[in-house]
Amino acid sequence: MSVLFVVGIVVFFLGLLASIALHELGHMSFAKLFGVRVPQFMVGFGPTMWSRRKGETEYGVKWIPLGGYIRMIGMLPPRRGDAPGTVRQGSTGPFQGLIESARGAALEEVGPGDEDRVFYRKKWWQKVIIMFAGPFMNILLAFVFISVVVMGIGISTLQPVIDSVSKCTIPAAQAGRDCQAGDPVTPAVRAGLRPGDRIVSYEGHRIHTYAQLQGLIRGSGGRTVPVVVHRGGQDIPLSVPVTTNQMQSLTDPDKTETVGFLGISPTSARERQGPGLVVSTMTDLTKHTFGSLIDMPKKMVGVWNAAFSDKKRDPNGPIGVVGASRIGGEIAASKEPGLDKLAFFLMMLGTVNFAVGMFNLVPLLPLDGGHIAGALWEAVKKGIARVTRRPDPGHVDVAKALPLTYAMAAVIITMGALLIYADLVNPVRLNG
Image 1 (spheres, rainbow, N blue to C red):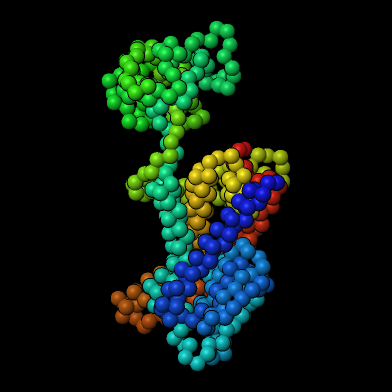
Image 2 (cartoon, one colour):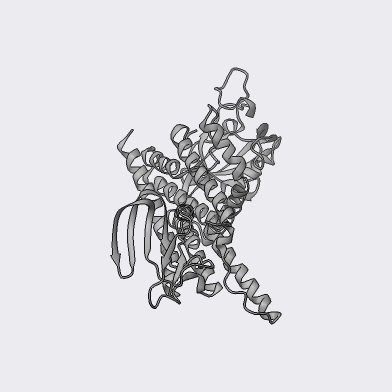
């Protein structure tokens, strides 16, 4: 195990902890803005490793660094029969919320002057903002990380410049083998194309990107095509007899199709992109995350099978904190250029933050989305009462959903434990 591998694990893990802290900071900032008293701000859960009190809030780090929470007084309203001036405890973190629920009737004393500083008595829209601010912070971090990579560092993009020329034409089904006697020479060799040649035009079309060139090549099978390459400071016209070959489909990697074949491989270069690509990347990430959340039960079955059998781990399946940090170590220990490592590192942090933010918006307790759903339901009930001129129905007691909360929290903890175990015994690896 190399030093760089260990450093990568530690740095990525610290990045995740910082993301957790910022998630909770999002909650706390708006809670304090709207006058809710926040007694605790903690990263991690379990026994306290370190803490310090500043003002009315205790800031600290717990020994189990797999989450975080803030405690706001009065997240759950009092039950009938509770002592006056007391409310039930509640926290923003799902793990901490489960622990508190398991304690049963955990009560907090509301001090003098705190009567209007409890969470449950705030306006519904304030409660929505407070609870949405945490996931929004993760989504914002994802946007920042992706923007830095796309617009600052740049994306590795294939160029219409030849990196290598294949000597012979090999069918896609036999890809990877060496040239053998009887294999036809590639059109690139016949035409005299060389590594370093920049394709300036193809069949009369001015070439700007490799994707454009690739599409033209695949559509010109069986024709002799005029090509202009830039070599040694001058443009050189060539005639290329394009053949056909069975190649992997661009739209469905599991299928092959007969297309035009030239026999060249492109170079790649890092290029800074505009904000449009950031938006499209975030859009694609949103679609992918929604799909992953819907497919989560099926994918967790795959994680189970990989953890307790010799089945290969799905590289596109869910991973936990341990697995993500391990990949961070692989990135740091790889032989890629430093800028490529940084870009991969930031993109992965962005992806993890986005997934955490979206997962927390699932409208079930003990997730933030459960409290948001409760606040929205309160708005609906109050709105109906106002329109029908009925008495104010009061605050919605989300604690009535505690049986579902227990089940959801148990599922979250089970999933987390399974992912940690699978990440240890059968981790996802960058190189398969």
